[in-house]
Image (spheres, rainbow, N blue to C red):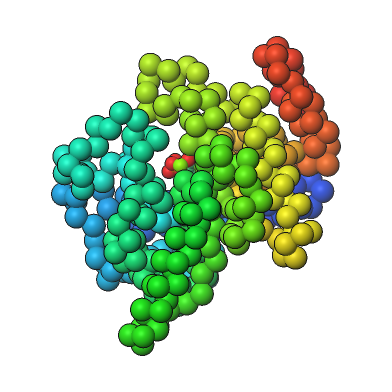
Length: 331
Ligand code: PEP
Ligand code: MG
């Protein structure tokens, strides 16, 4: 079966009705580009940069070291689009097991605390180092910058302010930098329910279903004692996801240009979810490189026009038996 999948590497990812689907890789280190390319990834949809930063005694790498890492990814991907996420430190990804910036990460609710963009904005000088490294790397190839866990208009404004400052600094120093598209992770239910705010300000969106499930269902994704309740197929999650995709696809009409949308949580790399997501209108998936060919196999045999009405039945199914039957009808 592995050998059969391997043969799909050069087969374009298209649905039965010939719609192109973008299959991207999630990476954690520049070395992960090799397996991504090996699997035929169309680009990097999520580079989780916090892994460059973890377990270094609490010290972040400087601008040049970050620039070197981002450059390696852009160069390895040979002109294919690369999406780099600003650090998602905190909660399930502590900067360092022992040495935290505030000396104590044993907060009551770390998942609801100082993590991701909140962490970056709490230390603008540190954030600016990452933004400068990203802007410099953007001179080498197509780069999109992705902001994790944004939920508030104030965070959007501060993020764009910091980007403007970073650009102004580089320009004043005569340092070469390139253009970037800026996107938001949609992984907080509050952001999903206020989507027009994000559609207006960002060039693209990427749905983080791992956190969206966690926050929608109030299930700590790291707590094994409640892992049986961590359910990506909960009707609330499915309806929220479908609504995000539909609203984003409809945004071009009022925004005047399309807002790209991808899913980069585990759901995107689960071949059992591919038909469901295609039926919701999703055409871009980002996943662990090892999942790309299995998901492609599902894309090749799917007809989204036929799946869409079946997905509507899924979305209006709230009783477990009813939902199971509606999901089974997708296959
Ligand atoms: C997610 O939340 O779905 C996601 C892709 O980000 P992470 O798993 O790194 O939080
Ligand atoms: Mg997340």
